[in-house]
Image 1 (tube, helix red, strand yellow):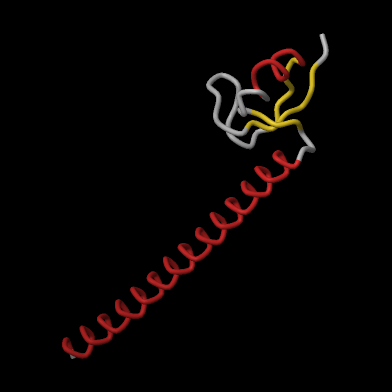
Image 2: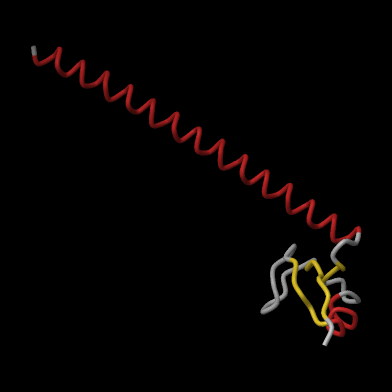
Length: 95
């Protein structure tokens, strides 16, 4: 039986996630997925739009994670500096 590649436009249980490219049987794609706007043919404008949207979201998520990690590293450095200052003060007080 023939099959085609489609991009899912929404999450479909036991089929795949939004933006996932799947191999679907021709009849399933033509009679259900595409008419119900649950999938678009790979290469179509609709498919390109959803894939571009997902790419942008992934980039935004990556940027967010990088910023979050940088802030975390900054906090660790600040804690180190504070602990070093505390240690110096304690050694001065003990002397």
